[in-house]
Length: 301
Image (cartoon, rainbow, N blue to C red; front, side, top):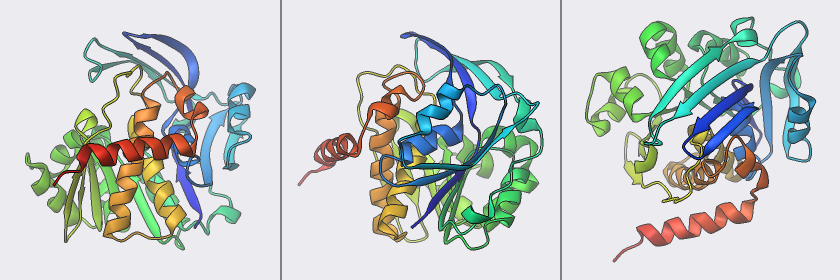
């Protein structure tokens, strides 16, 4: 089954207690695509400026990432973000956000890619996500991400997105903010009433929860001791999750549980280096090895 992701592709500057990385590849769609490519071919749709380094384009080469939908817009500048992680690596300060090209018109999905079976709408303005949904009427599985900014400032558009997708991935704070429910099980069930068939609630170092009409599934995070840069962990989680679903061509409850496990394993790789360095050096065997360790950790009589 074909897999497509839409979202941001940018240039990041990231600082953590373990060092600093200036002007590195980032963005939700970039992290998703690299993560997904460990398990399945993926189609990438996004827009960058003509200042986007050729070296970053070269990173996509040699991987099963179709960049047909990557627009390089003349006269525009690439999205840039800078952040600093504090001593508690779960706490982050945003130092700057330069929207640049992503404040302009959204890229169009090429006609050749509109037959994509599995689609992930990575974090961006819900109005843009709605535009993409309108171009993807043949998709079998549409899943979206969101953030607290859109819950606060674009709620009406976000509710339209949620009514049109099959699944949503968001973090625990966003789930509470969206629903007004503090208990995450209750929040998950409230999200389903907005339209999605399933909700995946990310809990950072505490793992993830899947809520469906019939089931609750909770999985801990992989306990990495080498966390250097959590940027992109959530997008990598989604990439591993969606790639597994696309690879097996199923979206039933058992498949969703397996997908969350793969997403967890892939995200644990991402956080062990700055930018996409760990993902770029990883392979499917490394994902399977961590999956095996994760299974052993949660097994009991």
